Length: 106
Image 1 (tube, one colour):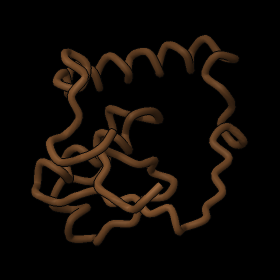
Image 2 (tube, one colour; image 1 turned 120 degrees about the vertical axis):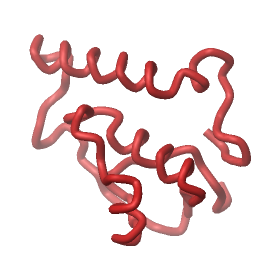
Image 3 (cartoon, one colour; image 1 turned 45 degrees about the vertical axis):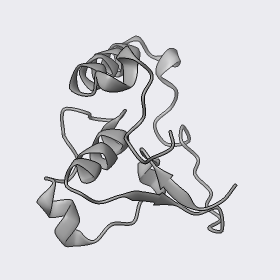
Image 4 (cartoon, rainbow, N blue to C red; image 1 turned 90 degrees about the vertical axis):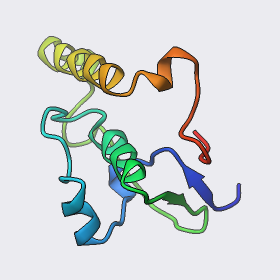
């Protein structure tokens, strides 16, 4: 894989200048756990910036170590489904015709 523009990357490996983070309003707290990183990246894109992926960084992310899996808890599963619906409502162009952000890979 080569470096390039992507629609979004996981929040666990995001690096962003503070002024850009503040410009777009940081993470949307309506996305308590899921989709906050993707929503953030897409708002950064709308502001005229890009999300760049590099395969040269080596990161370790243990997603479920601290919070557990959604499937194991009915309340967490409901929250995840609510956040998924909100994300799909906020970014319908990614679900209606399968497009990615223009100029980016998804």
